[in-house]
Length: 320
Image (cartoon, rainbow, N blue to C red; front, side, top):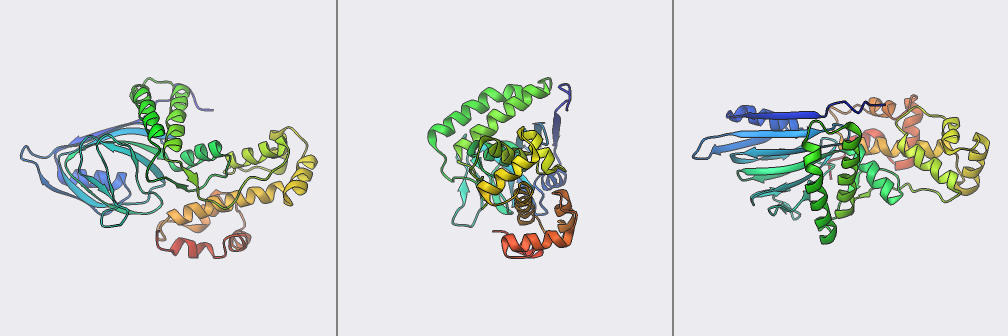
């Protein structure tokens, strides 16, 4: 269990060298294609400050005194951002280009690389760990976690509530002495408000099965602990019943077993990583083992039976 005294991750980088800025932002955005243009008349400066938890969310500010453009890569996170001045366009040269209005939070496109163009200025952003925000959205909707889809035009009332939550949360999130448990509670408030404002929904085909309350709890517990090495006995103990009763409930109400349900959750998590990954850097075997599939041959068969294609086909498919 983490200590309440663990410090948050803090970054404060600045400079006047264009090449250093390019290298920094390419690392931040998992890109090899970021460019910075001619500096302003006063010269070139850049600064990026951020404080937060790598496994939950990070709140930061980025200021660059020059035009920049290029490609933002897929990096396993979700980014909520707002700018103080006009001039930033996401997904440029597409029908769905997003021109960021000043002081209006927007979600970056996710699950694929995209092109951007930005005028000199300052941008604030909240970077959510992908798994964290997906679990928050799933818990709110009573669904299985998966890659999130966001509404392009958020609900105005919920968007205003999100602004209020961020304003109230920012002083605590940016303060390095905020305790770990308090920070986690505030992180959750911001994540839930973001899910509500943009109607974030998991893009998965698997749903919870109806049944008694203990069976529902067992499914939710398996979703939250799918990354761990767990057995049917572990699930039954968490649900407060014996393994035989849990097995019978799944068989009666879902025509499946607890471990088969867990396998489906894990298969969808593997698929989400393969969809978001790139062939040169994503190793299918490592992803599969990371989600508890020790026998790769059986994993490949399960994957093909569930999704109608091989894992390598998913990984090689062009980003949507």
